[in-house]
Image 1 (cartoon, rainbow, N blue to C red):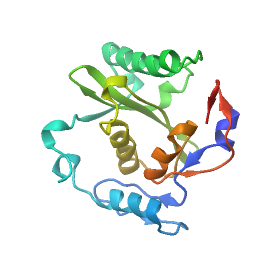
Image 2: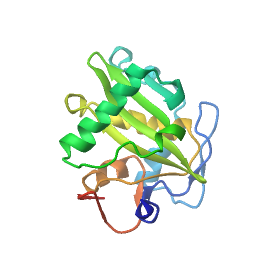
Image 3: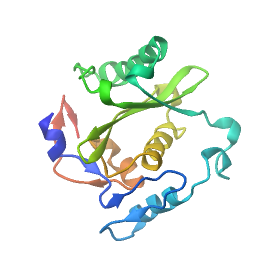
Image 4: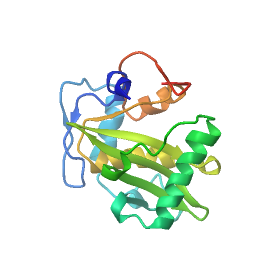
Length: 191
């Protein structure tokens, strides 16, 4: 996994805590379409349910817990979703339980069928690493993963980095992430 640090994707130049009371601070990044969209995202401090573009009834709550705070049933559901996506759907046999879950923040949302979308957030030195972003197949194209990433950008201190599969490059760019490094292969999947 040493290649992840050298070949990561991240928001460059953003710093500060984007909680409800904090103002975002730009550090050495010119405002453009990508940065501007993140700036607008981070400066709108109204809770999700108060946004005009979203229906309060349609949005599931975003939940967050450490491994120690998760009950067995929820932990099983989170790990099952990760396995369904990363091992079964992507036909990639790898060790998902990599030892990093103990120190991570687990962030997810559920619907009436269970866990709909998930990601984990880890401290990676002076950065936060977003990983294991997964959405259940029948819950895709509803904005769930985007809401989770935006939640992380609002409720944690940056800068943030992640290792993105190549086909998701544009999706992450829309969130303000910029590509760094060359494409590489991880477990048979271009990143």
